[in-house]
Amino acid sequence: MTYDEFNAFCGALPATTHVVQWGGSHVWKVGGKVFAIGGWAHDAPAYSFKVSPLAFEMLKARPGLRGAPYLASRGMTWIQHYAKPGLSDNELKDYVRQSHCIVAQNLPKRRRRELGLDDF
Image (cartoon, rainbow, N blue to C red):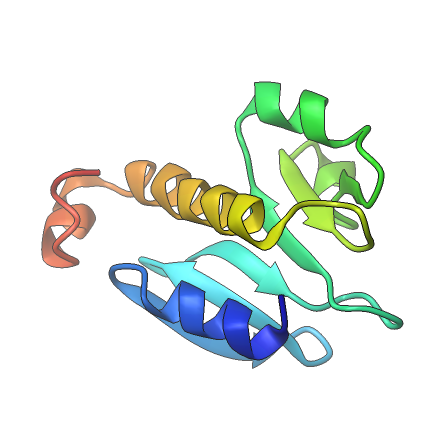
């Protein structure tokens, strides 16, 4: 997946915003909270996303995946897809979609309502 494809996919999710920060990374937020990051790798595209604790344990040992630098070292359950074989594009999209849901669900009810995310 290219950064353009990643950005198009994240931008199609409900109530998202995009900023470029942290050395040129594509940072995607829902309700002001980060749910996906494209960047932080120098030789190949890298994508970081929030996962459940169980998914974190399963994914961090797969080739091409690791605990996301900085985030996972602080006890957060974030995975980074940084090399092949990693995840297929469809798997990556599924995890990014799940990350969006995890973050949206943790927003206050009032904020979810304001964003039109009542179903989360």
